[in-house]
Amino acid sequence: MSQKITVTVKDHSYPIYVGANLLEQAGEIIAPILSRPQSVIITDENVARHQLSRLEKSLTNAGIAFSTLILPAGEATKSFDQLQSVLDQLLGLKLERSDKIIALGGGVIGDLVGFAASIYQRGIGFIQIPTTLLSQVDSSVGGKCGINTPRGKNLVGSFHQPDLVLTDVTTLDSLPERQVRAGYAEVVKYGLINDVDFFTWLESNGEKIITGDRLAQTHAILTSCRAKAHVVAEDEKEKGNRALLNLGHTFGHALEAECGYADTLIHGEAVAIGMVMAFDLSVRMGLCPQADAETVRQHLERLALPTRISDPKHALSNIPMTAQRLFDHTLHDKKASGGKVTFVLTRGLGQAFLCRDVAPNDIKAIFQQSLDAAD
Ligand code: GLY
Image (cartoon, rainbow, N blue to C red; front, side, top):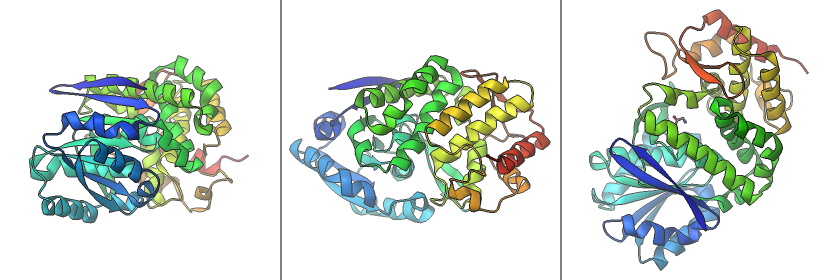
């Protein structure tokens, strides 16, 4: 049993299927959208260990021939080197322009494969099979794809929508708990942006998502994907409100850059701290009640996510950082225009908005507050 959401952008529309054990049905779901019964699966070593045989068996049962490329796991895979290697292997496999490739994995695999698909022979189709909570609620939907460079995260990439997203919630069972908690930050994001009822639901049900309650997981993924589909339909290329989906990300990306994109701080954890900073900044600017910032902090703390740089329970607190260096990272943000960074601020729970007029001193002060905050 699966549930379906349709994403519609200007000249393209595609389904997201969400359900349990969909990997076993992947072959029959994918077969009708292939121009010939042939494909290439691209995944990473960790996902290959837990999920690959399920997908391979299903494709075989549906009569789909395939090759499999297994890449190293981790953020470092989103690189020019891996992109070149993937493109070279696809050329070697004589993939044709009407073929589609399959991304089986989390955000790293989805972003890299989507980007490779967008430039292989000027663009071929691809299918997202996201296996982490983070990719199921965010990165597999909406067509943003790309790689990192030593100068920053996702600085080279494209918008290339998938042809199908297939989300099997059972893949979350083999994910380390830390990864599920980090993905949860992106779930909370949707409540904080504009859906206070969803945030209220998460206050009671958030932990169930982590502990594997299928109904709670499915509800959270569907609600998140519906919200994202709505935003992407209105603003595919992020000319305006799509940037709201970056709540907490400008602060978070600065922290990730300072940690060298290492496992010390994974993306969702950076977003959790970043969202608290976005609320704190909004309080500082007199826009948001202090009580709402406190509610967000307490909710994320209850879900065992870090909420400040100096969190003594997190390895991040051992990395020397300064507010000035963190601030400098924000200037490289992709939302910068005319030298000014667009921040996602808020008037309270579920009331996020975009603002280009944030004083540098306020941004630095919020970094300093997060560096200083004590128990
Ligand atoms: N992850 C934010 C977006 O897709 O726009």
